[in-house]
Image 1 (cartoon, rainbow, N blue to C red):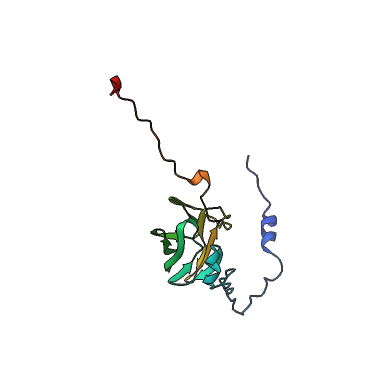
Image 2: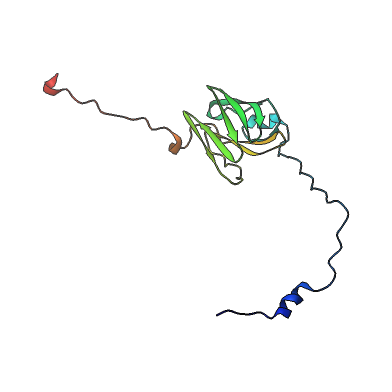
Length: 172
């Protein structure tokens, strides 16, 4: 069944007061907020293994030695991340993107990423975590979080396979 609307009702909807005047003043774009970090550009704040610093280019950041890492070297800040190298008992290199966390511990490491911003990682004994909170206009907000020096939790220690040597037959 078709329903018919009275023509007068449709015409009334278009009638009314004069439209609001159009503003001639240009609308300015909101200014971008300044990129900030708890420790600013004070890389010495990272000496204890925990800090939040701004990085705009190559930088050498001394760390506390947890997980065998004594220095973090930022090689470059890119549009969506950084390239870095860790130095200490060994040397490794990698990259870190926004909303990702890289963890380093004795004999291992790993990383995880999220599509949404993440809170700072919690300190875990024997672990150094690197997080890139944001990158804007060539400046990265880098978080470094370390637990106390020592072995990492058992869940992070690689399991070494063990096997039993079979006894030779006939008493050899």
